[in-house]
Every structure is written in structure tokens, then in C-alpha cells.
Image 1 (cartoon, one colour):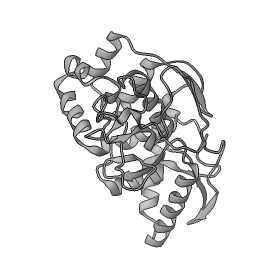
Image 2: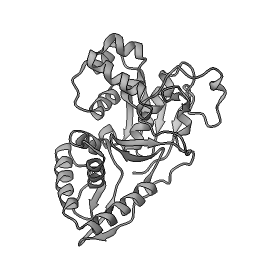
Image 3: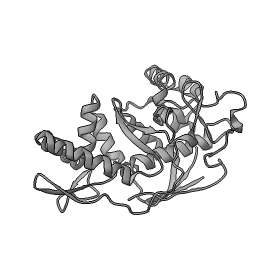
Image 4: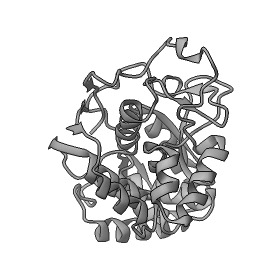
Length: 285
């Protein structure tokens, strides 16, 4: 199966048994690290932006979601989300095609001309290692996505990204409260303008995917959901079992695969891509 965005195109394939064993038993610090290892195993013939760390948060959710829809859904690509399987993948995947190349506007604050750019996997990897609550996540993500014009380069290394984020967080926290409020307002507008594939917001656990309809819970696509629970229990270390239990017990972070109520497969109002079809979408650089 081929997934194509504005920034890259990649073919999804099932990992080998050895790759699954390695993935489930590797000591990894964060979910982003696990995703990076997963993408290395399942993505091939990638063209364009080849490093998944440089894919946007939304693009990474899309690739993981399309993998689940293709290989771990018991025949229904519009897979179930939530403890009781009451919600569907299509309720979170945006209907509209995002505008190609949309950039957030430049603004001036505290003597700096700046704009916001998309949240990437590299940024998330840095933040997962240090953010412990919603306030830290908000300041961290705002810092990560902010770009001082003519000062912050694209294509930074993980070390440079971490240094920039930490320095920017200090700058943000030193702002007067009114400037901080304006900065967060600019970030909210930029986030809504640049959204692609999924809408998202920040909660205590970090970035979560929002539903298209009022009344549905937010969710996260966790790497462990790419594999049947029986396989994770059989091959993974016991520490993963608690992670999987949390993923399946908490509505905000779960895909309830193969446990949809009877007859729910007929709910195909906005179905996800079929397993035997390529997916072509457009995103934001």
C-alpha cells in the first residue's frame, strides 16, 4: 500500500517476525522512539522527506492510522476507536483536503519577527522526555513550533532541536503575561490554519487527535495498536503489557481493534481507505 502526502511518499509493508520481536523488546524512552523504530520497519521506497522524525505530527498519525487500517482491522479499514469500539477512524480523519504549502503568517512579538511551523516527530521526541503536565506541554510545543525569522534553520539535528526548544522555552517563560497570552493566541491560530489530515490539541498527556464531531473523545494512535493484542502479550516484555492495558482502557489513547458492536461495519458514511488501495493526500510542508 502506498501513502502519499505533499512532503513524502512511502510504501507500507508488514514487518518481519524478527522486527516485531525487536520492536516489542527494545528499551525505548518514549512513544516517539517506538514510532520511529516502527516506521523504519514498515516504510519502504520512501521518496521526498525520508526521515520520519521530520514528518509532521499529523503525517505520522496518518501513516500509523493507515497501517492499522490495512493490516490490523479484521477486515474493516474504518477501524474502531474507544473502549467499547463506539467510534471510528473516519470520525477523526478530516474530510477536506488540506491546502498545499500553507504557512502561518509572520508576526512581531517582544522585538522578534516570528512564525509557527508544523509540529514534527523530532520535536515531539524532545518534548516527551521532559514534559510532565499540560502547562509544560503547551509551553514546550509553542516553543518547538516557533521560528524566529532568519534565525532558526530548517532541517536541524535532534541535538540542535533540543537546544533550540529549551532556549525558546526560557525566552517564552520570561515574557510578560500579556505577551505570553498573545503568543499562545498566535499559536492557536497557526495550528488551526496549518492543520492537515487531523485536528489536534494539547492535553495533560501531550498532543491528542480531536474528533470531527462534538461529543466524541480525543484519541491517540499508539504504536502498539498496530499489532494484535495477542501478539504483544505473546512476544513483548511484561512492561509493555501495562502500556497496552492503558492504551485499551483509556478512551483518549486507544484503538479497539476487532471488537466493534455487531452490525457496525455497515457504518461506512466516511470510510477510511481500503486495504488494497493506495492513499494519496496532500499536506503542509
